[in-house]
Length: 227
Image (tube, rainbow, N blue to C red; front, top):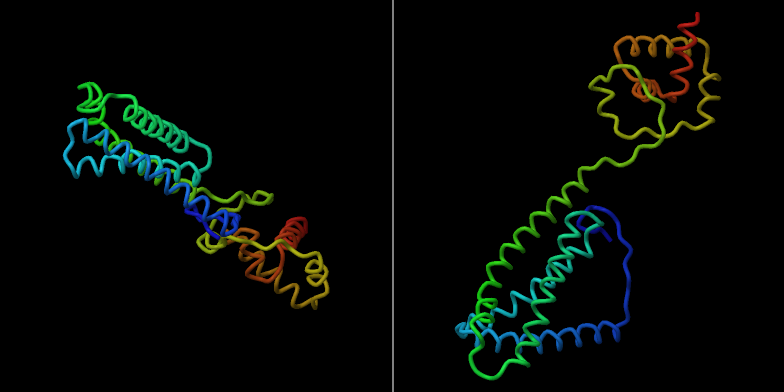
């Protein structure tokens, strides 16, 4: 199973009973919270449809921030999502408590002001959350994979060598086969290796071209210099 970052994640399976409990209790909790927050918004002076939408902004922000927290590794974007998550949870809890504790009828102007500023603040926070999450995922996708320990090659890169992104590790048996080749064929290969090296090819690119390992190419070049 692939995640948003292009990697592989382990799939955790739950039983149908566990899933039913999670979804059922979650839906019940959201419904109760929605009812209290909608009533508070109506008492704060919002219209009918505004009061119906206001709880979705508050609890929806919790869901969006939670998704970012569980899909990103630790970093500035994830820490911002945690801050946003706990801020939205605080607003939701305070709204539910105010619905219970405040007397019936219109609420205090201060409470009504808080209710009125929540939607624009949430819109700004959600926009920022989407941007930082997209940037974090983009950085993950473009970061190069850690390379295996490979000897540094001082030869200048050529277009042919630049196209080689993965080089298989040489097999020990390949070293033995290279010395068992007929003398004329081996001499021709060594001549070809020297030509490619003079043209600026890297040892890995030369090995891929002549069908020999990088170690064999390096040994042949060293032998030709010594001779």
